Image (cartoon, rainbow, N blue to C red):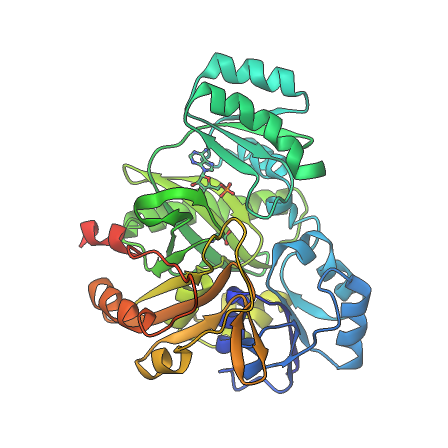
Length: 421
Ligand code: AMP
Ligand code: GLY
């Protein structure tokens, strides 16, 4: 089977690593890829992932059997719809289904209509009306831009002035911020459950927990994600069952009732309080860096599962998971998530690998025979061990042998899991 992977981050490096283990794989390409992905796939750098017709043309010319779409932007842009018109299968939802991530209002209204547990909310297109409502509700309160805002369109306001200011800041998100959602603040512990679906059957993957804030103890600004671990013990067996029965199956039924076919990965961001899960958000793709810990625990053939999702026969597949635990620590550029220097030489990747880590590239480039930094999140260092404490010890041993100027990372990834053990 010939496969084309869309994307260039740490998530896509993990997808490439796992797909490459499939005996079904023949030719493997990535648009645009990165130096980590280049170990497994031929990287095509002169096509933009936002240029649907160029991607379709490449897929046709190279007899691609399955396109695996990593990031949300091409999904929301309708890449899968264009590929389908050309008779090419994809792993990933079509444009309408991708609205589950592309429009917070769409997602919230669908959840409300079908009684899927989530925070109460109101929608506004008039900033003054939003402010009046916020004043009537008080803080803490959450303000969200409707459209895609590269993970930055959510402000969790701790007090009223911050909340009112957040309404004005929504203008900075362009058309994504024309409409806003004001949402009840939910307390609890967060977790992510990704699921495979072919539109009829939905199979949850192993649970994971992200660390969104830049500094230890969840301090500082929100980022794309500073590290993850899986499974997340806050997702007890009971919570996992509730997520499946009260959230995942109902959202798939809701989509079907609305005549929307959703195929691919459906990501549920959850808040769990007293054993009760509620939805924080849905994403229409694999999480980054959740993928970097979930896939290393998948024992089945990922490519076979992805093809089953695209062909509508997921119910026939047996999907099995390792009993181990995995941790991914993200190594970021100094300054991230604000501005940072690029083109700094990275040392120690091979050494970390020799100690047993899998090092996923997120923002790197090759220059001569050097690997340089090229993004905010630079590398993801993943280890798999028999349990969380053993994985914590090992991952930080591996992290310590890697270095670049101003490198920073959280020292408390997976610490939240320890209270459950
Ligand atoms: P989102 O982009 O919707 O995942 O929001 C980003 C982060 O904001 C989430 O991971 C949560 O930490 C936080 N957040 C979003 N909505 C809420 C809410 N209603 N209550 C509490 N925290 C929230
Ligand atoms: N790790 C959060 C996300 O992928 O949206």
